[in-house]
Amino acid sequence: MMNNLDDDLRNSIRNIPDYPKPGIMFRDITTLLGNPRAFRRAVDELVQPWAGAKIDAVAGLEARGFILGGAVAHQLGVGFIPVRKKGKLPFSVIGEDYALEYGTDRVEIHTDAIKPGEKVLLVDDLIATGGTAMAGIRLLERAGANVIGCSGYVPGKEGTCVAATDPRGAGLSAGSN
Image 1 (cartoon, rainbow, N blue to C red):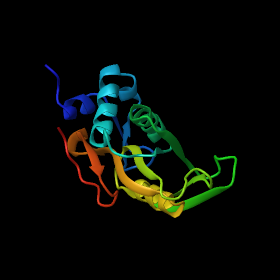
Image 2 (tube, helix red, strand yellow):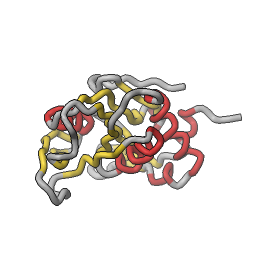
Image 3 (cartoon, rainbow, N blue to C red):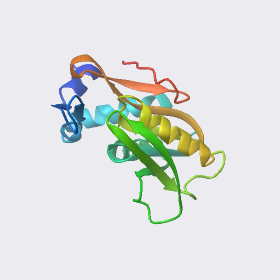
Image 4 (spheres, one colour):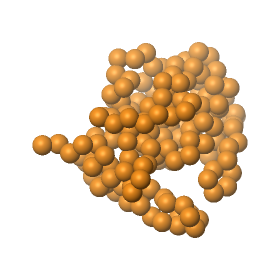
């Protein structure tokens, strides 16, 4: 009998209190990535809402969103756009600044990463405040993308997680199977 999604994720994600700053609960997905069953389940849950949808590319937020986003792009048979932190890309870039729960940061993509009107799904691993995801959406839209959604996992009380997908990206709503 298969465990539900919440059990698979809760048991596979390590919680590290006070990292990177006091008062922050860091959710470490390296333990999920090392668990083949949980990793497959996480990817499957992110892919399922978009199966059969017309998507041109998946964009993944650095760095852990690269892993899940790359797997989602592979499963959907589309290309992958890395949304990198400031200064990590070697070509001409467009960027977006945003506030974190513990500071500020910037995300960037290459100026030629998106063709105008391309339908793009943004993927991140865990969506805490949604600030990074919203910055990614704003950046992709400024670059000409039609962002059709944002997918990731929303940590809940006591380390629980549920798959979250918003067809437009704003106001992420959580749902589970």
